[in-house]
Length: 72
Image 1: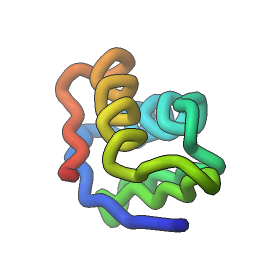
Image 2: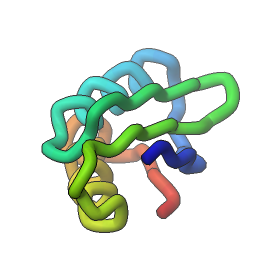
Image 3: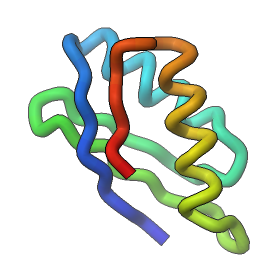
C-alpha cells in the first residue's frame, strides 16, 4: 500500500534526512520525500498498519530534524 503525506520542512538537506529516517523505519518498504512539493510518499510492507508505522516514521523524522512536521 502506498500513501502520500503533507510535510513541512525548511531545506532540501533536511528533506533528505527525513527520507533516510523514514526508509529505516520497520514496516516501510520505500519512502520518498519531495522538498519542492512538500510531500512524503510512503510504501508500506504487507501486514503492517499504516497508522502505526507512520507514528514511528514521524518520531524518527523528528529525531533527525526536530523542526520538521509530517501531517498524518
